Length: 360
Image 1 (spheres, rainbow, N blue to C red):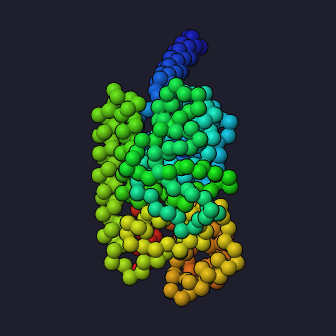
Image 2 (cartoon, one colour):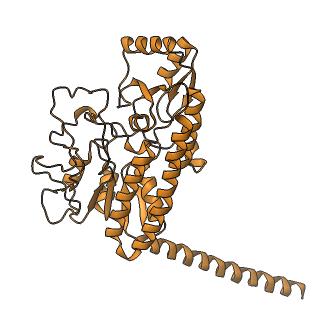
Image 3 (tube, rainbow, N blue to C red):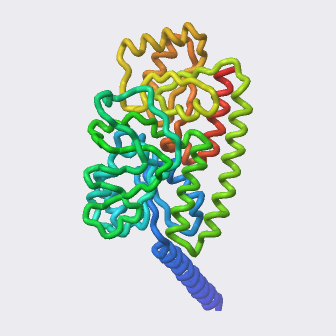
């Protein structure tokens, strides 16, 4: 009798587990199906991905083209990334010369329905202080992107064999007339526009408008999300202004010149060990100049980044007695930042704390 009872209990347990397993499989199948049914949006680099994800919420499938934790200067898509764009509904990139590979890659795609969005349209671009071998190039950046070997970028990629991308933003001047991106140069303009909360708001609005156009059924949802984050960006801007405007020091020494827009908005000056491109290495003369500047101006902190080797910053610190702190350009997240669920806003708060500490 006891054996019969044990058998009945065992049988009931098997049936119950089977039911749970089927239920789990059904849920997983449903989740996968929902994901497959969503429109697919790819963002080029982390800040654009973060902004897009915040606006899109759970309505769209948003992925990043560039692998997380990758420094974007000099990176180019591999075959898998290009395959993903072939199957995407929309591609959103920063522009302003950051992604030197966009023209070549987009021009090679057979996906004629891909909608392409340049998030930095509307931003008042500033020139980088390093020319990066572009002294002899007439490289005015005009967001009309006109007269570029019949390579006008039409944001809808509509029915053209040469993938015209027509960037119709007459108020913005990023004239990409001479796109020689050999050596991954960014051109004379500073592409790190998102480091300013004011510019981040412009990029978010451009992204919101693009998502509304892509998915009109959820327009109110995207608008609501945008308003939420636009308010947060306004508050962040006000906090930066209040925290930095009365500090005695205004100069920051940074590993590479990614903070021009931040400095412009809040009255700071950046002195870069490297130029706007983090790949470039300083020569001995540049190192000596930086060390001399730090000593003469009583600089106490040199800023490095999470995605680059701090070797050069550490050498300068050892020569000057500076401390080394992180000032993130938010080009990508380290694994630690990913694990801590950090995002644009949390990192900008950390940046502000480190700036205040260095400029007191």
